[in-house]
Image (cartoon, rainbow, N blue to C red):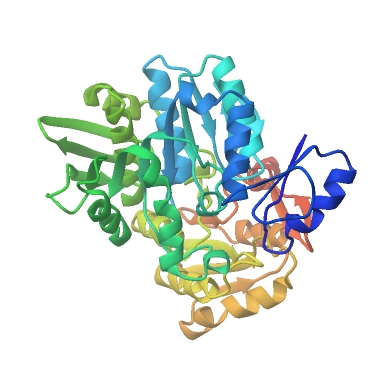
Length: 448
């Protein structure tokens, strides 16, 4: 077997080379001389590892059409939309992402948004053996920097947007953006949202590069594809998708302008693969939604919605999309993640003060941080803007308190967990499923 020496944030695999030989490694792959007899020195051991893994499984990515989605928000929704559209065209599709991995209709738990190179190629190999012709996957910035996808060529790459996130890892927005662009270096077709300032940069960078750059917008008529006559409701959106020689009516069961962007990017991904726009638009109409993405848990006598929004921009998108349809109070429950960019905490509360009639500030995933400290750092904007609020560390208790206060026609949105059924506290993963909490609450309420 081979041992690959990689440098990580807290450990350098080169220091383990001699021990690896003693434990049976016949070859050491490294970036510098380790002093062992059988070593192969390479420029980048992480790239070498990814190529080894791909070759070990006979390069499964080269046997299927690969679609990669990157951006801060919208990746999960876009992957599910594309998978569903392709399946309605009669294709078998694999999916790799945040909520789960799927081999056609078989669900496989997901540990990372984008798996490590070995696990990724295991999945791709199984997808090919199961008859999948297409693979649609979320591509994280960290996975790109860590070269987990090195050597994979994408038929289509989609850029959704870029807003502040993961700066604890990338340090600056410029480095975060550079990480995202790694995907486009290995893509034939690039589908870009130019309503986002970084999307415009992507379009400008790759225009004339030999790649097919397809732009879309709800504001700029200069884009290849635009959305006209947008009609938004609390449960969906309707619009005309207009591109060269094509006008198609789209009805989509997810609300908000950001959902229009997700629908357009997904549709254009499929047309870039050769599918007819009219058929793709019809397929969007048949899609019911995505778990944990603006998902309605209760409709009457009040509304309870679950969403994964966990960044300032994510909150802005979902809250601005739902607020206009609140017939009574608009109540927002949210929290800020521990051991992640702490500067986001104030901005998240700033967004909540713009839309909420009542805020419930709870824990998200504190991880190893003190959850009360996180809440204290997020609290000042609520106090400053005199928004009525509850601050409760125990998220389960906070949800119960929010549900107890609901009146007729109120909207309560639970932000941050979405599809997740766990909470990480003191670095221990505990079971917490908001879908179940709300279901049990409503059952007891209806029994009274």
